[in-house]
Image (tube, rainbow, N blue to C red; front, side, top):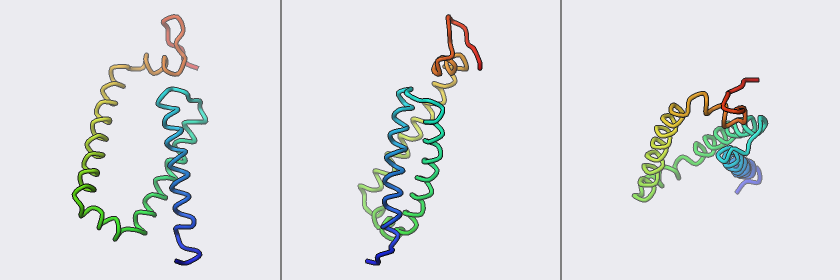
Length: 117
């Protein structure tokens, strides 16, 4: 293995950005957020995405060999199915919640009225 291989910088980048995206995502899921947290989540999410794509491309032959196995294919199909289910459910829940719920979730509702800053 080369001393300066992509694993020395790419794997830690993917791992740390993954951890940050998961932690910030969990905080946002439980509405324990502030303005900085969403910004951090989005920017580190972009870094995670780019690093993940580079990692995938650099390991493409191994990735393709994984996809030839039944378990991996079922895993990919399951993640795609659950993602679509969440996407569709999230869209309808947001539509039902409307703007009133949006302001309420950010602590901007007071005595039954919505306020904008």
